Structure formats: C-alpha cells, structure tokens
Length: 390
Image (cartoon, rainbow, N blue to C red; front, top):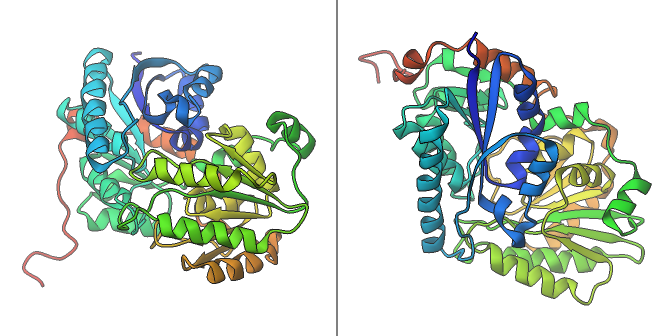
C-alpha cells in the first residue's frame, strides 16, 4: 500500500518543540511518510541555530529554506516572507506531498500555507481558532484557517471560532495541544542534570522569562519590556536566578534582545540564551517558580507542569487561560503584584485547558481517516445562520 506522504514545515524552536512527538509518531507510522521543510530562525546563528536539534532528533529534513532574518523591520519581514514563499514552493514542487502539516501563526508558516494552497496540496493546520489580540499573529492564524482543509484545534472555544469562519464540522477536530504530549511522554530532566547541561546553578527562586514583540503596539512593546525589567529588579532577592530566552524574529525582536543583553550585563544572577533547546526549556519550565513575559508557552505548557505564569500586556489577549495564569498590565507595580500572587500559587491546583496530552494520536487518526485529496481540496462555506434569517 502506498504511504501517505506528509510534509511538515517548521520555522522556529517553538513550533518544533510543540510538534516534536507528533512528528516522531508520523515518522514511525507504517502508513505514513514524513518529510520536513526547515526554515525561519532554525537556520539563524543569532537564534541558536536550532536546526541542530532537528538533526539530532533523526527526523528527515527534505529541504532547508533560509529567509534572511537580519532585518526585522516590517519591510524586512515582508521580504523574508517572500523568500519563504519562493523557497517552500520550490521544495513542494519536488516532494510530491499528499498533505502539508502546519502549526500556529508565524509569518513563515503563512508563506508555507500560501505555497501549499497554490500547489493544490491539502493543508492540516494545528491551533487554528486560538486568539492573540495584541499581535499580527492573530490575523495570520485566521488566514491560515481559511486556507486549511483539516483543523486540529486545541479547545472547544477555538473549534467554535473555526466554525464561525465557515469551516465544515467534519473538518474540525478538538485534539488539544500537542505541546502537552511532550510533558506527558518525556520525563523532565532532574535539577542536578539540568544544572550540568546549562553550566549554571539554579537559584533559590527561579523566574523563566521571555518577551516577544507586541507587533500591534507602536513601539513593538519596548516600553512594556522596560517595565518588566524594572519589576524584576524590584522583586529580586539574593539567591534568585532569572533565566531569559531571547525574542523571536518579529519586528522589534532585535531591539528587545539588545535591551535584555544590556540590562543583564551587570546582573550576574541573570542568564540569557538564544535558545535553551526544547528539552532544557521544558525542564526549566517545570522547575521554575514563575514564568514571566508574553510567550504562549506560559499559557500552554506552564499550567500542565503546575508553574504559575505572569502574562504581561496584550500580546496574548483573548487566549484561553488556566487558573495558574495571572494577567498583568504592562506597568511595573502591576507586574510586581502579579509576581507575588504567582509565587504564592499552589502549583498542585493548576489545570490546563489545552487537552490531555494525547493530541498526537488524535491528529494521526484523523489524518488517516481523511477523504481523498480531491475531496479535501473542495471546501464548502458553512454559514452560521439559516438562509433568509438575520
């Protein structure tokens, strides 16, 4: 029997980390064949050259598509997106894929969706219908939903939004987030081993911080970052450790990283990493007392390991949150107050709204049961209202 050829596109440490177990399960399935297109920050030394992590996993890389991420101005990002579209289209033209698998809302992932759409290859999209009102990502995510043919959503609210966009019920599957599969299936690295891997000692209290650009803000969130750094200074006590992972490649990311590096230079209790690697990141996430910033990992993965999150500003506005997430206005006093609440949180009471850690098997089951390619490609718009009604 001919195997179904699935091409997954990964553009960042974030989406690869979330999809890691799903990709491994596809590669190990006798009925499926996996190929990877690697692009985005994976191929950038400044972002940790995280393609090395993919190579180490043994997953098959079919194409590498560099997209010149040295200019993070809006024009530069648009030019990088154009390079992604061209390079991914060229790769798909030779791979003869049956299905393109995409996750999330990055601009390079939208380029992949456009390439697959124009090449008439069905698209399976993970995490459609989610909301992040403070970022351009929100628009990108919804645009990918309309280009996609199978929707693997993380929760029922997101399923309702995908349905609201006119997508047919039979194409929508509530699978939960594959980010939780790693947490269920992989033992966390113990504290002493993690300290060896990081070549640094954990503190008495540990804060894991990440700040990405708020791409709809006039200054891309730089004022918010300054307030967050001031709040960290205000709560710091001798023996604490702050672990910073650098920003993504959105507009404003270069300046965010520069300010974090400058701020950390005379604070020996701060460690800054382009990328921790997914295994180390998840281990530190589980050992941290607080996750701080505006990364979606504070909303997806952190609750699943019981770690409280202080979510700053509007970047993740509208996203479904667990009881362990404390939203803070981007002002130092509010952030300090939220950190205090997070430190007092009973981590045993944390409950994630993003599934049970079995997303991978649910996604693979749905892919195998999907209709033939020609049927998948022909979508019908399903209105919410009855014809003739208001």
